[in-house]
Structure formats: C-alpha cells, structure tokens
Length: 315
Ligand code: MTE
Image 1 (spheres, rainbow, N blue to C red):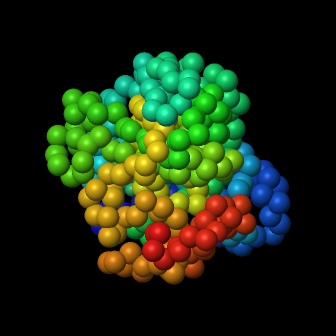
Image 2 (cartoon, helix red, strand yellow):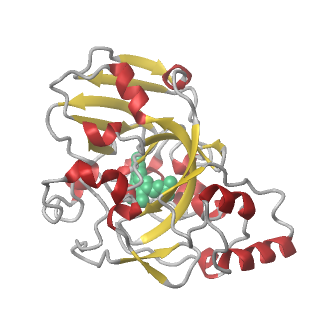
C-alpha cells in the first residue's frame, strides 16, 4: 500500500448527507463543531439531501468531532486490489460484479462445519447498524455506518474445538470476475486472520451493508469483515471461507511485506510504518490532520485482549 494521492472529491467536500440531529442524539454528542453544520448548509443549497442514504445506528468509540464520512467517499475511495490498485478503481471496475448467489464455507477445527448459502449463513443472527471509526494503514480515516452481524454468532454456531486458536478468512478467487487477480499484485486469494478471542469480541462485525443499504461491490459485497480497532487491511472483503486453525494464519499483506504489515495490525500511533509515521491521520474530506488514538479509540473495550503482549513487536 502506498501513500494515496488526493482526488479532487476530497478537496471540495462532497455533499453532506447526514441526518445530523439524529446522529448527534444517538451519539450523545451535543453542540459539536461547525464543520458538519457548514457541510449541511452547503448540501441543502445543492438540494442533494433527499437522494442520499442516512447514517443510522449505534456509534461506537466516536469522538465529539467525528461525523460519518459522506456516502460518496465511503463508496468512491476504496482499497480492493481485486478491482485495481487506484482508490477510484474499485467503484469503476466492480460495477458488473455479481455477489449473488454466494456460498460461505466454514471449516477447519470445528465440530459444525458447513457450506452455507449466504441467506442461511446470515439467518440465525440479528442484523445491527453500527457506526465505527475506520483507519487505513495509509494514515487516512473515515467514519462508516456499517450494517452487519456479530462474527461471534457465526463462530458459536461452528463450535470451534479447544485446539482452534485462530480464524482465517479468504476472499473469492475468480480472475474472470475479479480482474485485478490477473496481476501478481498480491498473493491471491486475499487472506486475513484473527486470533479467536479477537474474532469473538463483540465489536467484530461481519458487514453486509453500509449506510443501511446492501454493501456496494467496491466495499466488499456481499460479506466483509470489520474490526474497528485494527488497520483497514484486516477488513477482508467478499469472504467465501472462514477456517479455524491452531497456528497463526499468514495474511496476504504479511506475505507481501511482513516487516510493514504485521499479524495484529492493531492501530498503535507509537509504532511507525517503516515508510511513514502512524501518529496522525487525515480524515477523508478534511484538510487538517488529527492525532491517531491507540486502538483507534477503542482501547477501553479491547486493550485487555493484549495484556502481556509487547505491542511494539506485535504490530
Ligand atoms: N479485501 C480484499 N479482498 N482485497 C483488498 O485489496 N483491501 C483492504 C481491506 N480489505 C482489501 C480488502 C484495505 S487495505 C482496506 S484499507 C480496506 O479493505 C478498505 O475498505 P473500504 O474500501 O470499504 O473502505
């Protein structure tokens, strides 16, 4: 992953879609800054508010100056190398991708493995809306209203054995449908892994939607991982397989450059990427940089998962 160039859409902020009052009420935030207000006014004058989806859901770990990133940026500024390495490639190149029908295989060290049609895979769980801060290892960030199911539900149904310590996730491998896989940019299919306790953490979500709609293809339709305290590259898209293992899985990014992208990928502002600092971030749609928070602001919920672990070595 290289440092991104600024597309013009970020220099002039996109129309502001948020039902701001509802968001602020849900977030328990009163009287926050004027930035959202200015955007709201400009959107109203452009008459774009009606057409746009609304951010709904429970905001987790948000700060008083966090507001959901506009839909246009969430769905137009993406990393999904199966559809190209440019930030605007996935939106263009994934247009014709058909995410249905879709099968998810659950296997490895568990007592209830299975091949599930997507609908059956999702059925036992309650779909939830959650607004999470997201941060890419490239030092840009967004606030995204996801829709999805807790990964824990899927894990519980699979009944992992005592020997299972990790979960490996795999993206679809199909170079005809994912043209970026014709190029050796990464080891295909894309893989990511979590420790089993991280996977079971209540914040970890299998997302099926964003802004209350089904996931757009460029965001990982029909099913992708969201782990809000980790760098975005853990959020593997278009998942076809979930496998329980005893040993730590090797992700595509560890394979590509293990000195740059570790297994944990926990956001830690004190551990620089070898080629750039991780101490601050630029929120898409803003000029100024913000300080990056430990575990992306989710330390209260997740720090205990890592007690006793050297977070400089286990980056
Ligand atoms: N999943 C797959 N299969 N392929 C990818 O290239 N990129 C990752 C992650 N998941 C990627 C992927 C990276 S680097 C990031 S930052 C996030 O997806 C971006 O998610 P978003 O485009 O929905 O914001």
